[in-house]
Length: 432
Image (tube, rainbow, N blue to C red; front, side, top):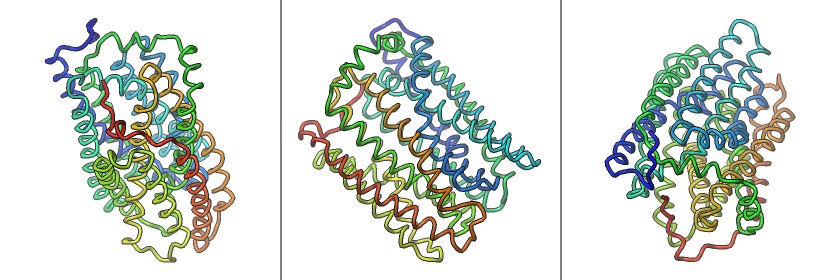
């Protein structure tokens, strides 16, 4: 419901928060069943070549190109309705991937791959379009306790994610092949569609809809005359490219290089999730002393170490060796997001944050996705052609991660160019 008030009454805020926490817990359960790891497993089970699987990994960032559609929807129907529309479409796209898998099983391979790529882009595009209204909505329903609510909201998502990964891992350990993966995706999409019904209990003020109707061009002029924002844009573009190459393809690399089972892949996904929680907690404890820029530099150095470890990876799978690598991968994904958001909120004037946020997602997210789609796809197509003997696959991925190491080292320069935040801005700003 839309309230024509400056802020929601406290009782309405509490009720909306409870509904949103329930939604986000269900979203955590759902997303791990239909998100990047399971899409990669489905593509591998469909016998897709490695460069096609890499294209799927880049779709997460390419999907940011749909952000203007989210802004238009928010201006017309409001923030809650925007999330309901795009979360419904996102889960229907996941069911489309299940249909693509079914087509591959009956011999319609080319149609199946085309549908897989289309539905993957739709899945991530709907996710990105829904993000336009996410942060303003959270600030609206938690104006009095926004900082605490954001932490709790993130926690329930990760709890749902971990539960989902454990159950999926157990199921895929005893049921192997493409059909069980389709069951997982179908279940996740069903939970996701049910979670949308919970969103109907989330209220908002009409101000969110009105803010999305403000003219764009004057704000764009201010955004592109802000030198610090432009440096942040370049740094975030480089960070996203590093994630696409080094993090998004780790499941693919360990499956193809070592023949790891789906159960093993799920366990490593759980390690990535735990790494995100652990490193975010550690960073929160020291961010006021180091600042987000320094944490980004440390995390990017650790990611370069991950690429170096893959470059010299042993010929046989050592599970204990790869646990810290997947933990670093999960931590890098979480810390890049949180530190860029922290630096953004502390350095971009409040009146420009909406349009700058959209520019950031479009150019640094969507732009990196487009470059990754072409560059990583071509790289893997060259290094891991179809029919490459299994004994040579690990060597190909060692060369792949050598390119990743070079990219991480170049990205250090882009992050180092950011001016350090003064001490008084190193505590993460509160929203709302």
